[in-house]
Length: 259
Ligand code: G3P
Ligand code: MG
Image (cartoon, rainbow, N blue to C red; front, side, top):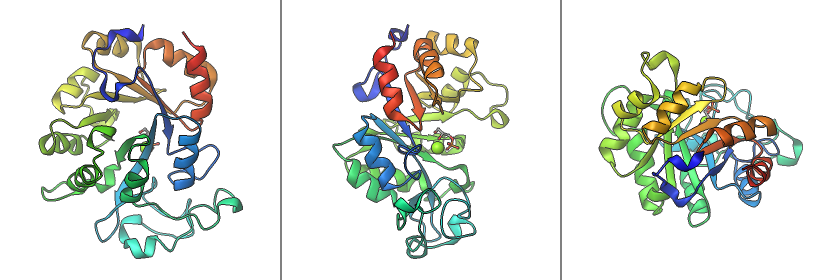
């Protein structure tokens, strides 16, 4: 069923994507999570990126530090120097005490020639006004590590997607479906409007009619976040080009067994 899509960037028939790294077994969005995901055989790692106060792309999901670090307050109010003092492992387990927030640059350097990345630009990091923003910075970094063809850049913020394609038309982008800003447009209408390549959707929101439309318009779709075998099999059979999972080892095993 999944053979309908002719566009196959990254030369893979299906992507096992580690959501925030191997985030079931390690603290999310850390080098430990990325290294374990690679060892588990993930083909791509999804990570969340926002800007520090001094404008450096850093890897962290929440807009605030309180839950998942030793700090508190808004991430973008702190410089890289401050953020690097924080412990982002202990909240998960004492085994990860001393784990640091990674810079996007550090992840690119490690991932080069090793694994594909899905860089998700957090909506709060996108500036409404034009100027050199997170989109330019992420592209420049990917280019400087020769990783432009090994990254998929996604966002819930559609303005970011539009800008990414204006800056680098050959870049692969993923539109993260967000009902509130979709204005009732269908997946392929959204992809066309924002010139995005992939449709990323929550497992709770995907509809059969959308899958059919995406198949007809030849657009790959990817589903997050799927951690249960039964659901993994369901979305593989539905023709998803990739699945985001906190358990990439389990997803890989299920994919190998599912026709
Ligand atoms: O990119 C897929 C997924 O990560 C989007 O949601 O909140 O986990 O970043 P979130
Ligand atoms: Mg994410």
